[in-house]
Length: 312
Image (cartoon, rainbow, N blue to C red; front, top):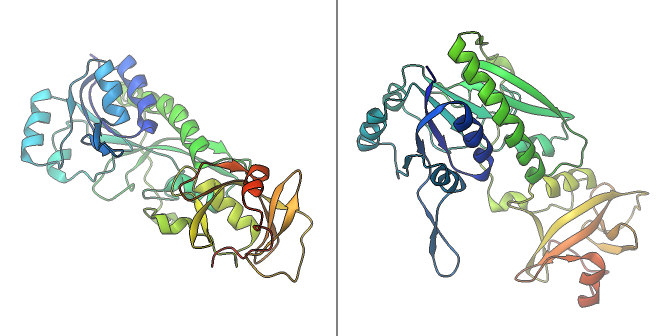
């Protein structure tokens, strides 16, 4: 008999997993975030997971909090197991007790490395040569449950959080189905995490994207990729926010210029900015309330940009 699954997830990243699990198992219900107000008209927009669940004719719950009323609704669906992908809420003991076979979670890192809410940006920021996906058992402590399956993903240093999230979503969906089949047949093994190796990442804020030009160009370039699509790497120019959307480390380096100074332009690489160590070449950028531009188009509209000091 097929496992009866309650699926919990919210963003686009969880959609491939929802589709993959629905193809192989019986999803008795989907828990996702309430509709969000967006745009100037404050129009209510359902989460990507809700949109796909409705297309699949699945029962959808959108609770503000996981209280007694929600637990009764879930209990009436009689699920065997809870499957979580980027849901964004912590499950308490009363909620987890509703599932005879417990719960499993997809986490986009090689646990116990990068427990927490931002493992994909963290792997890029740290310049890691690899990351991965972990399917783990849910426990009360965040991302600390036994590991069921892991898959390593090599990194080449060009990934953005957007591109790596999409890759983890696709690979993770297949790994999640594999784990569920292993649970169903009793063939999957639980491996406890080594607490001594646990590291953590934090919830990102807009301020995390602010560039300190004292940092090396290599680190700022990682920020540009790690904070794409959010919160984006940004600096100040004439008191306005300037987003740096695409950049690379420029060689050779020039010494003696002030950090944050726009020192010139390279026709192939972009606008050159002095950093604490080396030069950053900015290819694509966006001034506050304007559209994103390549560096040539940007300079056509900002004739005095060369020579300016960013970040002030």
